[in-house]
Length: 520
Image (tube, rainbow, N blue to C red; front, side):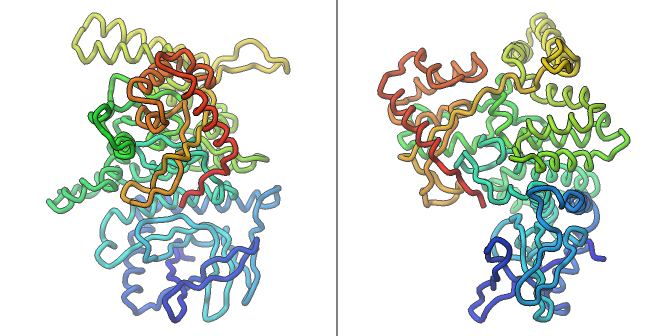
């Protein structure tokens, strides 16, 4: 049996992709295998060699394991039937135990999809599982970027296999997602999980075949997606994403609020002396990718009886089996530690060491920032004291997470939460400030949804009445507290006026009525 089947769309006379009604009265694309001796057929042969060996083999293996995990739980409430099939030629395909699928597309980029009709000489079979859609041509098939993109999209497919409701789930944030931005918990986990595959791919490819970047590739790297791809490897390896960003240089003089917003969102100028808040970290896909990358390389987790990838799949599957699935890094870690209590200490230590305890304690954040500053200044006596205090504090936090404390009302040991310094999400919908779906798009039709507990100064300045000084004061207050409990916390901010508070209250009410944002 093939590990990977590569398909092309079945098209009509006008070149449009044919669709057919499937489950839940939805239309799904009709796909087929390409003609063997065609130009596409030659691409298929090259792709199969490239995407079934080396670093791509892990993504394929995990995707298959995710389908097998889904099959084992197919009789549970909310699980799809493994034998769905209807319509013309309504045979069923055992897709949950079959190959993975890749659709060769004419659309730029890569996408994770769910469900399609497979046409075989006019006989159509519905395939309910996920698949990857991406553009590949003869020039790009030998590029290692194909492997990276394929593994990234397979990461999305794995989540959708294990959490079937995720494909249609709206996000509370409308912001453009990118590794260096902060959005919301579920977007960050979805993208961060996919991105950690790219770092693993880079590790294996670089160690196997070091390559010298040519001038053209170097210049192309200046483009946004090139910068983001670079950060998904080097930013993850160096744990850059946990840090706050430096304030854009144009903060005071920039007249265009949208340009300032884009400058802040796309910036990769991280300030090593500051940390994101715990909530910002958990809503940042770059931080999530870093945590997952470190998890897969932690011998304390990977070296035990069960393969680490199987443990990851089990934890994501546990999220999907909940009555109302919650997808976030916090939920994933909690489910993992419940399933594998023998790993609890190692997992807690990895999370706390990566985040410097920001998700647990604001005191730990301040201790880190003192150590970072004294270290940069070369103040050896202060650094020794600050560094020792930081290490001591982080070890205490790890002990607090893993050691039982006072019994709960159920007479069971109660453990300190890793997420005690996260705080509530405080969403606002700024319907008067519109953004585009991606940085390179010009159509600004999407209202900006922002979270007071993660918003940057530039985001806050999109609210009428909030200038750079007031935005900085809000961020400073949040940094001192760790998080805001609610709008009332802002009443003490110097420069805050009643009109702005009223406007923020109105935006919060609009956010409560907002149905959410469906991402591509």
